[in-house]
Image 1 (cartoon, rainbow over the protein chains, first blue to last red):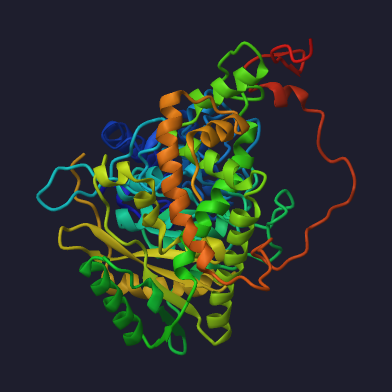
Image 2 (cartoon, each protein chain N blue to C red):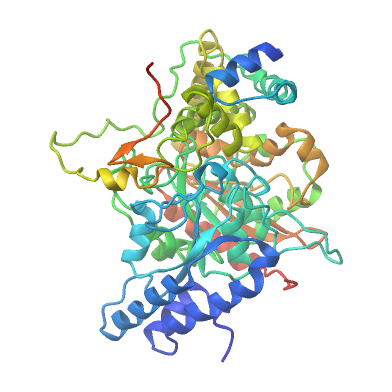
Length: 493
Length: 95
């Protein structure tokens, strides 16, 4: 029998339905693959093989009874940010030591209701703050990809680095992830996988550990565009438990795949051509434009004049919201407690020990910009700039643009413990320069692999859509995928 | 704008994060790098621009004012580092 972990979700779904394979066999194959690979890649922080097999057997029973769900028997990895009842949920932070929620996040509950199987919890940057997955309490994740002829370890991107690495290394059929400034799309681009951040309000945030509430959105990382569409259909819902969940029915995203592009207008924003961008990325972008033109789309040059201000505005808004959201980690209600001589000292020692450097840095920035005397200069100014960033997009969509094509990242994956990135936090933040605008405006964005650079590392293109028009993104990304082909990391682990 | 080490210590205390002298010194440099980076926002003309309060144009959702959850004190304290009879236990706060 061929390796079952090689099947996409769509292929596994068909084979399960045809009873050519069982869910227990499929899950067993992934459990074995994880056992062999996880020590090298560090993608999972916790595996749940017994629960997985139990869920798979239940799937087989439902398949036999003829009432299979949309994801029946499909083994998934879950980012450690999602609350999973009775199972390790720590946002890869020391401060949530031992936390096992007594509830299930809406997104994961939706997946289980559709029959999916949980393989375990995936590594990530602590509290989803990072672009390299080096900021995890559980240590860095290694990218399954290496430069041609090199055995140097590369980062998988972040914060959903465990999700991206697990999908690329076939340690799950697909994974949940979250994206606050690019945390789905940047790791997807670094690992040759597909990641979509849906419109703000499309997936419920209920039960997901909060980072920056006005920006956080859940979405899938998958091996191809079709699998991403299948996963998003199950993850998305209208949820009374999230006040920002939008009351719009969830369409059948898979049905959008294969629709012709004729008549679509694709915008190319000149502001995304940044100084110092590698030639490989400029070439990739031009190639993407050519593919879409060949497929019948019309290409329109557009301007999004406030693009360069998105990242600095983000580094005010996101830390401000984080400083407020993370106030709850006080050593009283859950997780770590470090004793002190009084309650203040207990708080201060607990938080000093429990949070990593990057998280502390962002809490400090957030506390500072919200503090008396600085609120107007920083936070209010940033929220006004955010209005202008959103208006840039509204203007081009109003002028008839259906989707916008940009590079996904300004570089391919970089090395673990890169000295430049370690020395300067702002340098690390620049990873999100093309993705963060989308979060600031609440729009959907998809990263799709489009080629390899000169060293053989994957590069992605990003498509940005109108609010709640994920369908156009799947439709267009699929055309790029068809033209570019799929990219698999040569196995070294 | 930039911060000095005493401001960093004050902010750390507001954020309830214990910092050593060396931590505070290191953070001062890093925070100033970030504050230097965000400084460019001042170039933007925001006259007459409303600050964003919601990316989605929607009215705040409301629900019936009724009790539909609760009576799960044991669940709520289950993850506390120290709890007794459904109470969180903290160091003495009032003398």
